[in-house]
Length: 435
Image: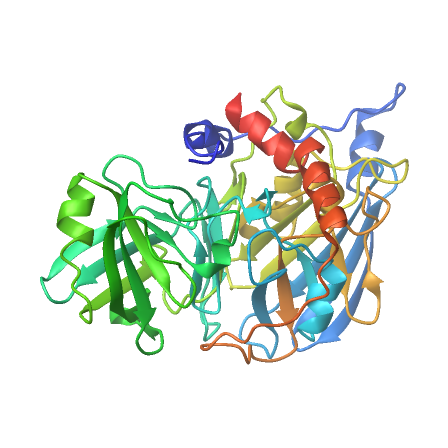
């Protein structure tokens, strides 16, 4: 099991209500003048069309600079998510990911660990990962009637239609089966999430028909035909997916072994009661929940220091906010998690979550390129991103793979190292979770 699993209890830092965000000020300054200086901001807003706007905000007295992409609900623009490549371990620059999707704008996505998303991720109906660790999830309904964000995660279940036996899929490209767990593996896992080589019972399933929404338009459902069923060494995952369980466990005996070749297994994934959800991306910690600040600066890890950050939020009317904050420079010091939450609250966000930050915090706008100033000095290659498309997402419901400009193995390794040593990126998050 990946090392980041089992740290979910430490996400309590995201569930506490913090105190007011205070930025130290040098010298003796009248409190009234100091408060006015902190709130004084210069904002430049431009329309990108399709109900999308881009705003640059500068607060010279702090100093602080951040960038906001706002997408109004029910407008032509569409929120989308995208992986860098077709398998875990793929890295690409945001400019490449966004440009190849003909996006209007975009922001970096989730934290990554060894080229895998740390939190739940689904794209165009395909469940990519149940998440190496649990956090918050964000999604916009396919019909754009609803936007969702909360401390919730993807759950996957199965049904053996021959026996009417239902079961949980405990891991999805997110770890080996332990105890009486059932773990799923797909070709997307690549070399980073490989099925066990032996000691398991495994059923290879091949898709039989398209995805469809479940009852009440909640959940994505797909039927699969059992192609092989073996105990010992599982068959290759190519061309299908594998459901696996350790031999001589209740999961192997009651779930995997009864799956007869040529019979049908129905798999469903969902996030709570979210309707028409086809894309999901995760992050941590939750910053704003139900209009209240829940980020806490009380932690003593460097992750909670002032750093460059990126995040996504939603307003009560369904407006989506993507924000990137510059940091680690004389012109912008960055923000703490609580300070980041306050930025979202100032923009009337009802919910907000922190995404990958530090040198990975990147925002791109068509015709302008990378609009923020990444602290790495340039774009850090990413594993996934949140995009704003000018119209509908043509790749739904049948995903169309896009050939992004992937970076070399050397640059991918450098990106992995940078993320694991960055206090506001994956390394800092895992250290904070580990306490």
